[in-house]
Length: 567
Figure 1: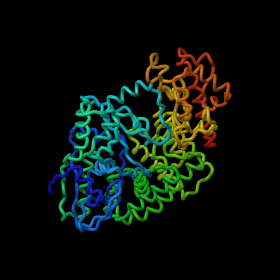
Figure 2: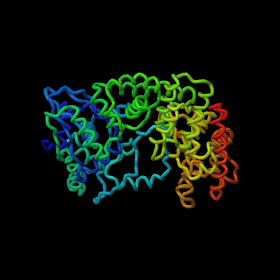
Figure 3: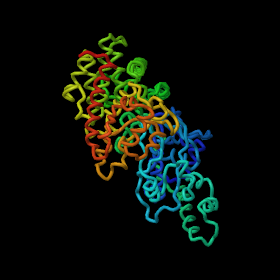
Figure 4: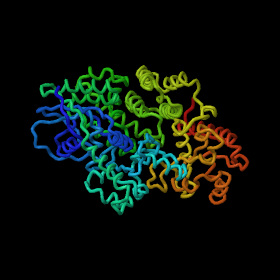
């Protein structure tokens, strides 16, 4: 194995000219903007950033596209990137100002650089201005003073319109695109050479540009290696470094023996996304393995023949298609973000294919009941999620049916009904929170101002769904713990405009105003008690207890109603 060195600038130009390519075994680009921010921050500090693994070969190899645009290389040989894709794609996007294709979308990565960052660089990373996430957004109820103080300590942030208008925050991409510091100095209010900030800002801008001079070590595999050997090296390198998930390594092993199969996985991923389910390729790989082997782990992938994989491909795709239709049309679940695990579509896929996609009424209602309970209680949301999935797959394979799946749930949780204590101390990351949303949406809950039904696919900052602290955080923070404040029974679903309008107002005041203008129904549909005596700050714990009982009763009745299941 040869060793070389190359600067960031050289590597970015190689990508731009198409001299570096991605083999089919690679996963797609997955980094969020905040990960790119942290990479740039590390390079600005001069921290090490690992090595790059390449394979130079004259062999024709199936490829996948980079997430950034490339030219056509005239070279007969290929430099195939085996390790470093996320870093080099990110740097290429930032330095060239190129948008990236990530999770079905194409968008630029916009970072801002703080010319006034502290001399001693701070490690604060708690401001996340990105909108990369799907589903229900957190409310932003920190005061502007608090946010400004935290921003002043940061060196790089993900850009927002508001920040980009501030004089000391400059576009990282624009700095890389220009060697002239004058526009940045002028924007920051520097008008004379005698200004002491000239030297400071100039040094910082030049230090930022020096990231292009950072030198990566390149480990280059020999041309004599076969594709199978290179795949094995790829799997071992990434397994040792825990850089890729098991599904990514399984995909590499599958594409090594079934060439050009990545296009099939990508096509299914696109079709799922069009239905509202952003299943990653890794989930589609797992679904295939489940249908091939009857279990979910990837331990035997390297022993599976190309023929066996191909023979089960259409079956796995049909099962997954049925599963998504079942979720969307029979359960009114239109997004993966409303389930506590991506394993549920895979289980339904296997269940339906095992029964030849022919369910009787009892199987349909039982499967709906099982899924809602299993998702709410987090059947596949714990450390042993693969083992739990394999237990359920075995139950189906051995003819246990819905009764067997429910028996597995009872062994795990002891009981199936939801009790008030199950909700205590849970926050927005809890599986119960997703089920709350499903129940309230099923009941026709609406935003308190626009009257739009609550939905995760509203667009724009005014109407995009957020969760709102009924007793606002700032209103409670001096008296109650963070855990109590973030309890899911202190959370409601409303649009961004309404959330900002309420801000940190006392609930006894703003709720009375909405009841007067909109009526009580908007609060009843989210199980929010509006008795004036329990909306006072000192009665907050009593409010939580009251609402917890209301929510518990509604979740149980909702699950029974939508499933029509009779035990």
